[in-house]
Amino acid sequence: MSEEMGIFSEGALDAFRKKNPAGVRKKPTREVCACGHSMNFHKPLGEKVYCSPGRGGCLCEEPSPVLEAESTRVFMYVTTGFGSEHALAKGILASIDKGFGFKWIDGDAPKCAKCAGDAVNPYPVAARVVEDPSGSARLVPTAAPGVYNKILCASCFSQI
Ligand SMILES: [Zn+2]
Ligand SMILES: [Zn+2]
Ligand SMILES: [Zn+2]
Image (cartoon, rainbow, N blue to C red; front, side, top):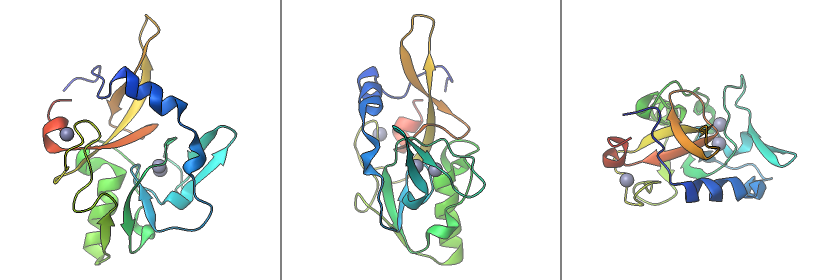
């Protein structure tokens, strides 16, 4: 896999940027965002959204609920890599470890952000925006907290 390879098309990137962050909920919810933190931690500030899970460490600007958790308090991790090193995966594993249930909002499995198929073995991936010398911006996967967080299926993950 290459750090320089974008995982989302340029069209998708434009759509992300134009998206209005009005999706932030006012009421407490048990939904967990793809970044791995409770939707309740996402607060609008000006035109942007900030996710502040306690000690910080999240750059999520695109809240997107992916699962409902019996306890969102275990979803407090920092992303340090891909797949199992992502904050979402760490929260899920901690939930299972502590006996808390959760369910995917998409059904039996989350939808892959790239091929839209069922991500039966989901790989959460953080991405950041990189502008190349020609001025065009792309999303590239990052092994650290990212502005965008997506779930990929095993097959799409193996191609990044
Ligand atoms: Zn988030
Ligand atoms: Zn977050
Ligand atoms: Zn896929």
